[in-house]
Length: 168
Image (cartoon, rainbow, N blue to C red; front, top):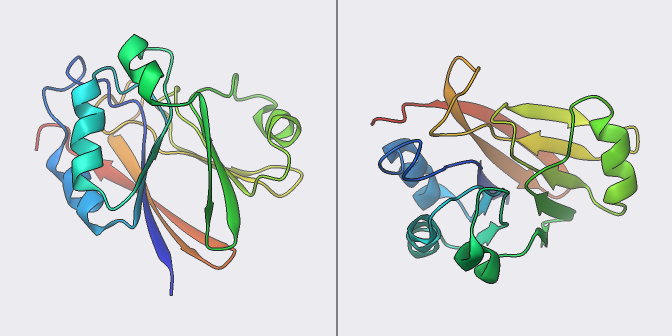
């Protein structure tokens, strides 16, 4: 048996899109756990995902105000299958990210982060998997808006980056 995660970040609603894309909501319904790595911008998005998901883990980001910061931690930790997962919004510059993550998040198997709007999937020197889903609503310099779906079975993680039509 495996656990399916929907991983999103940087939704920036309603500033970058008027509503959550339908692909995100459909993936939310199929996920065992939804992970949001910050920059929700409005509490209505948190309420929507809480209502639509089996389970939700989220953190606040640099664009999230007092209401979201009161409801969400800066860093979240959860154990899924045999893996210790940490969630944070920002990890700093891409250069040296894996080494910094090993120091900042010891005893973490998977680190999920956001902020850059750039999909990222790498492994640190210590063996930690680093995942950034990009953004389903604001592609910035990327060709598409994106989200991630991860399947975890024991300690094995398979990840797909999925393009999202932010207007659908």
